[in-house]
Image (cartoon, rainbow, N blue to C red; front, side, top):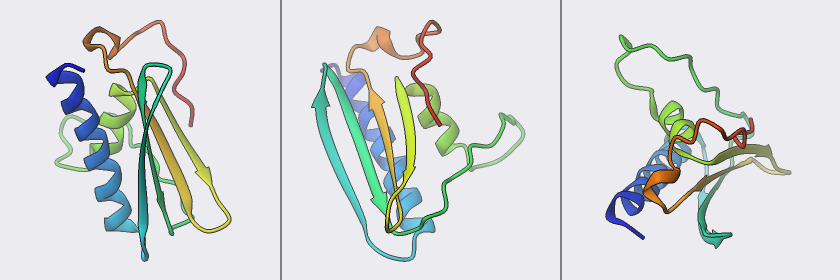
Length: 108
């Protein structure tokens, strides 16, 4: 995995775990898996409310994390669970896979 792709995975982990710690009242869990050549990042937390990605606003200071995660990932999914929610983002390790305009794999 290239340093750029590794940095992208670290960015996604940082944003998702930071949001879980900031907005959920209880614990959170992180899992990383390699599937089909991609890194799947899953974060579970105890808050059942699903996050809402804001529309792009270059004048807004902060709160762009989810917007960035959705933009750099091959897929992004949110699911309510019996307790809390799970957010799963898939990051392609190849540098040229980020920002593939032909992909519709982003799900909300």
